[in-house]
Image 1 (spheres, rainbow, N blue to C red):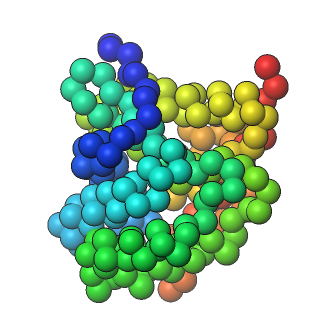
Image 2 (cartoon, rainbow, N blue to C red; image 1 turned 60 degrees about the vertical axis):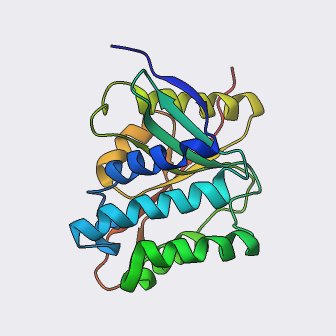
Image 3 (cartoon, one colour; image 1 turned 120 degrees about the vertical axis):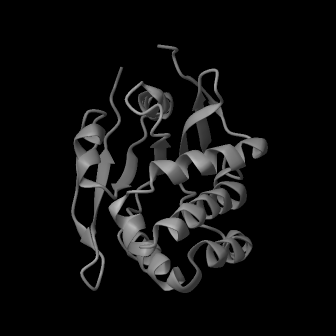
Length: 204
């Protein structure tokens, strides 16, 4: 097994990482609720992740990718403390991409975003908005390498970290890194559940 190497994401990585994250989240319960059609979801997720990375996360220096020979195998999109809210300029730049990504389902995407914003903690923290591995490399350490890279920095800065798990199957995985579920958020009209998770920094 080749060890995954983690490095900061750059603008040329936007396309490959969007494809990887699109495949990683294709069967995600929340994404399936937002985009129930399989073909539309395949196209829409790639457009959504590319839009988010290009216009928000790269600007904040929060993109990391893991690769090993065959290119990007996993990616993580982080916000540093105090930067999880998108600026008005970023929202304006991202809107066309989101409309293309979600089409007639754009209101469902907005419902997810608003629910997450409403319950987002105010205490300064690193925010793990998105992490995902290509199904072809899942279970081979790519995601773990990404988690350790930024969580080691959190511990060095003695900063907490926060995420929302959109899949109940991933909760135990995040718990292994020190995250704890703080509540449950259920989307309207019989929608799926999100699990906010908080991680206190670990002293060395």
